[in-house]
Structures are given as structure tokens and as C-alpha cells.
Length: 357
Image 1 (tube, rainbow, N blue to C red):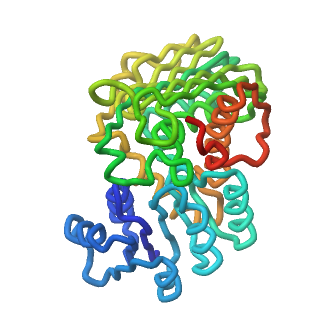
Image 2: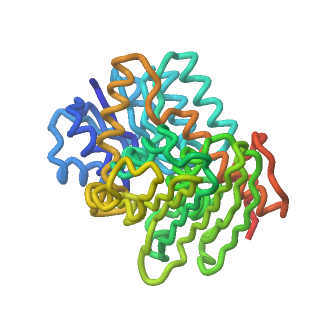
């Protein structure tokens, strides 16, 4: 399967390794900075046949590609995705967030449908062994009635992080802590608690990062249509380094906590059905990835390849990407207006909140 990567920055190594592990034919890479491409060619010993482009449209015109991964700044995801489908007729893996507006997310979903292409939102933590084990328990209804869950993202991002890429922390190209650092766990919380949301109320603030436009702290309460509640607490203000990314789920008959670097570790596992030994589950599902990106990209790629071959939807499709985006935008809207935001959310985009702080 012929593959290309657009965007050779911070997250690109995970995509390159995933492509290599899945035996994709690396045809081309693209980045506006030639130095980024040279760095990846050397570090990952890419074949000399790999062609480098600084203009993705030129790449689309010259190459026949089956699968393209988009790992640019977030604000460019949508237009590049649409061009890749309409010009290149390629299937896609789009880094989170899938877009920065619900209108653009809808365009991606509709274009993929019309062109009969597969689009995956890169929420790779769904493929963590710990998360797969928890999802199995949800689908087996071991929790009974789900009562509530909480997602905590307690990380740090300093001036150096933002200064290395000026688009970070801007409303036009990124958003703040919720959109960039917290959206993976927000995706998991919504997925586990039932997807269908009644309303959201949130508060956001920029407490210490006065050199960015968006928030560095977000707190929200979600009411799901099935009666469950969700709590989100996310920040990039923790001193002196990343502390945790944690997901709690509480049901009538079960309690689970997944923690560690990127929810890779099951720390609590208790169910009334006693189908398994909690200590054995905690021992078995205890990964220790080298960074917050975890090990999920490789199985995510494997699923997308299989989805293309079997003509089915990817495990994490574009609709899933839209649902995670919708929660973050709803929190932004609630915090900006001081109101409870009902779902489904109408048209909304990060750029709507420019000048918020």
C-alpha cells in the first residue's frame, strides 16, 4: 500500500514507525521545512526512493497514493484532508484534532462518504491495551448502569514548547490545553460513557501562559443522555513536569482507574461479577511507554489498512474525531458565554473565541 506523510514535526516519528511496522511502502514525505524531512530520512533510514516535497499539492499531482497521514499544525488539517481526498483520492489518517471547526469536520465526513474513502481520526489511545480491556468491560455491561467518569490531564508545557512552533496556543491553528493536550482523554471519556451528550458546562482560564492566546486550564461537567455524568479537568500548568493522564469510570457494579503516562496502566479494577482477578488484571495491563504518545499508532495503522482492505469503517473514524472536537468546542462556548450548552452543538470553531483572554 503506497503511503505518504504530510508534516514531519514533533509527532511524525510515531507515524513513520507505525508505517514501517505495518510494511507500508513509503513513497513520499512532505513538510514546508526541508530540514525536518532530512532529519526524518536520516533518523529512520528511509529508502533513497522516498521523495520529498515542500508543497503537498505538488505531491498529490505527481504521486499515486493509497494512504496519507496528515500531521501538520491543527488548523491546516481540514483543507489538506479535503485536497487529499478530492485531488489525490487517498484514504486518510488525520492527527487530532480532526479539524478546528464543526463545519470542517462535517465537510471531511461528507467528502469521504461521497468519494468512498476511509478517514481515521488519530486518537491512538483507544488502542492502548489498558483501554481495550476497559472497553471490553463496557461492552460486556460489567459496570451495570454507568454513573459517572472523570478525565484528568495534569501536564506542563513551557515557553520553549510554544516558542518552537508559533502556531501552538493560537485560536486559528491550535486552541489551548483542552484541544491540544486533553482531547485524547476527552475522546475516551465520551466513548466510554455513552457518546450521546445532553449538555456541557465549562470554565476555562489562562493562568500563567500569557504568551499564548488560548487557555491553559479547562474544567467541565458533562451530562450524558443516559443519565451519566462526566468531569474533565485539564491543564498545562503543572510544576515541574507532566504528572498524569488518568481516566476514572464508576458504575453500579464496577470501578476502574486507568493512569500512567497516557492511560496505559490499569490501577484499579473492581467488578461485582468477579470474572477476573483484579491483581492479575493490574499486573497484565501495565505498559510503560517512553512518552505521552504511547504505543497506539502502530495498531491504529494496522486497523486502517485492514479497513481499506475489507471496505469497512476504521475503528476510530471521522465521526469519532468530530465527537471529541464537539466536546472541546462546547466547553469553549460555555466558558465564553457563561452558559449551559445543549447538544448537538451548532456550528462552532476555535476562531470564534479569538480575544477571549
